Amino acid sequence: MRFTTTVFSTLIPFILTAAVRAAGPTPLDVFVPPITYPTAGTVWQSKTQQTVTWDVSGAPPVISNGAMLMLRKGNITAPFILAKGFDLRAGNLTITVPWVLTGQDYQMVLFGDSGDFSPFFTIESD
Image (cartoon, rainbow, N blue to C red; front, side):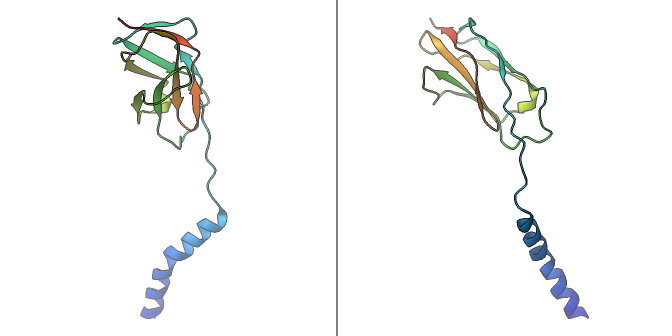
């Protein structure tokens, strides 16, 4: 009896793992919140504090990936990582605008389960 109990208790993790694998992967909710600020026509000064906002209505209870906010100029996104690892359900994040070349072709890119781009806006530098 003791041998049977030991063997059975040893096999339980393997049986459960096989059952989970047979059921297939758990589907994940994809959440792509639209950026609400900055908007087209927004002008930021470099080295100032600004708050980026996005719409969190309809957010799933579990978001599968960590959030990241990046600055994009023209068609180049990297290496302008402004923040990462924050709660995507917060709906906003205050950042310091980096010193960059003055331009009208900047966008915020919000990554969670997928990426969303803000409209083009302007950053002015001294």
